Image (cartoon, rainbow, N blue to C red; front, side):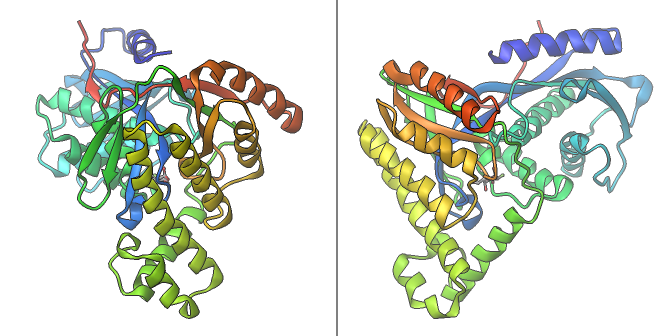
Length: 389
Ligand code: GAF
């Protein structure tokens, strides 16, 4: 599956729903995070890559419905929703529309004269799989709106507006990782992102001998419950106890110096973030020097920290990680994304990748009675306009 598949489906869906050809469009990828989990909202470091799977938003202005949006989602049984573009727009129902409602609202607040439009959205990014289908929808909506208005913004601005959409329309106080990688990824590279300065460093990940395997546990994750905001709050509390702006500025020494002021849970949350930031930077260096055993060891240590200190893993994911780590040719494996379900990411010798996926499929089904979906990915490109010719 490639972006082209979603584009073809979106073109056909638009024609069948609206009886005409779509005129403009945007596409944006999901992501898999190699390492650096739950560090972005602590101003820390992350190291994701874009998937080759994208979300596509296509459509055209509808002068007959100035001020109105009509949008159809393939993934929601082609549900078609109409809403008015008003000043002070708020989140609405159904929930899936809030990604495009939010982006429309934020572009309007920033001086974009968004015309009424008809649109469709199609995606190949697994929804609820922890691989950032949300950011892919936000960034593809952003490009689509820019194409409609014939005016563009910087990639970083688009990412920040996507994060704002998430905060104000979706209700998730997320960090900036997902929108940044979906917006700024470049083909063949993982991106080291400093989530404070938003500086990025591209690191090639194109060695044919090494593969990144993503395995979806098919346990749907939702981060809009209390688990994610609880952790954001705990990290802020720990940073404040240490007397730093964010955990990015803390060290294990400074954490240990306030240990008696913290609960056990807070201490472990702090330890995860501080050690994870260090692992990300070490991992970037190891990847540059193609030291894959080191990259893998850091990934597996990240998983242990997320499981034990941050408590965002689940038995299904632990099973997949352990299975991968006992398989020939595997360098390391971990949960990826926000947690509580979703996917694992495994670095494995290419010659062993297909056999690993087969083994995960068989053993997971035998243990949990559920099918996994896994795929090999290499780093894809960031959000872009769709060529409609
Ligand atoms: C989710 C969030 F949206 C990201 O900002 C990040 O915090 C991630 O969970 C965990 O690393 O994807």
